[in-house]
Each structure stands twice: as C-alpha cells, then as structure tokens.
Length: 105
Image 1 (tube, rainbow, N blue to C red):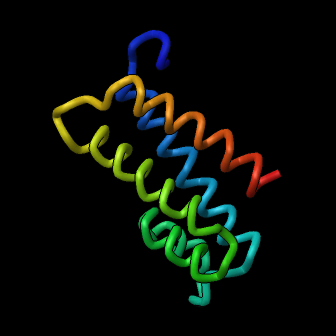
Image 2: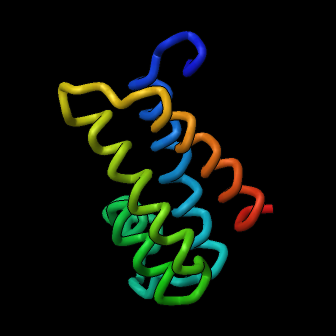
C-alpha cells in the first residue's frame, strides 16, 4: 500500500495490526485485572494498553516512546484531513516489524 501511494490506508491497517498486537500482549501476560478481559481489551485505547504494558515491564521505555509516536501517526491518519507522509508510514512499518520480532515471537 505504501508503494502504491495509499499512505492513509497503509497507516490505518498498521494501526489495526498494532491494536491487535497490544491486545495479544495483554492477554499473554495476564495483565488485565478486570473480570471480563475480552470486554476490557475492547474498551482500552492503545495509549492505555501501552501504559499498562510499560508499567508491567513487558515493553521497555524506548519502545513505549516509539509506540506513542506511531499511535499519534495512526490517529492523525484516521481522524485528520491531512494525510501522513510516506516517511511516517515507512517508519511505522519498520517499527511494527521490530515490535513483532521482539515481543510476539
């Protein structure tokens, strides 16, 4: 999608993948302390999930900061009229590759 110039779509799809990845980490590490985890994970925003994972020391501080950056890019892509640029999309993609290798493999 990035190569095809569909930057907003690429960032939105990466955002969906990121959200699912964060939910997976919460579930794998049994971090959610509310009774119904499935509902809890749907209610939590990505920022809150990152905060919980960072507080539990599942995600390190450097990756936590990068997560906040890519979440911001995703939010702008989905909610703002101005489209993210190719560099932002490529950075998001590279970070996702890193994140998956480090935390989900």
